[in-house]
Image: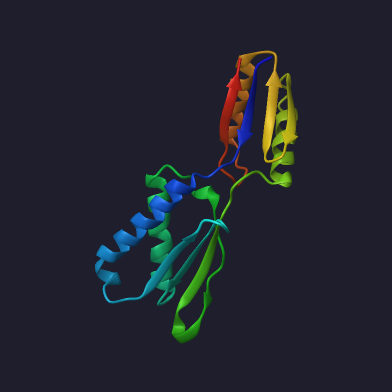
Length: 163
């Protein structure tokens, strides 16, 4: 029986490249000359910490980071941007969590959606992935199309498709 796995993963090397390119781009910008900002990727915690002189520069750093993520083919849905708060001397700080893996809530939403499509498919949650099996490969391709059209707040990838 044909099957495929639905996962949500983030390539941390591509994220590291996006952060480094964002740092380089910000270093070349005129409005960031002689201004202090920090943009650090914590691979272990899967988080990005940003500190800038003020809210305007903080938003500019976030926009530049998102542009670089798109450039490296990383979906911006994988970034969970927290509200910024003020630290000493008017500097603004925020932390961006990187969403990696499917949560149980998201996985159950996806399986409910698959069942509501009335396609002849079985879905099972296996840790941080969903295994979808069916009798026809066309049904699997159709569910891939339908899942791509939906918004589940995480980027979805389809891997391990077997005929």
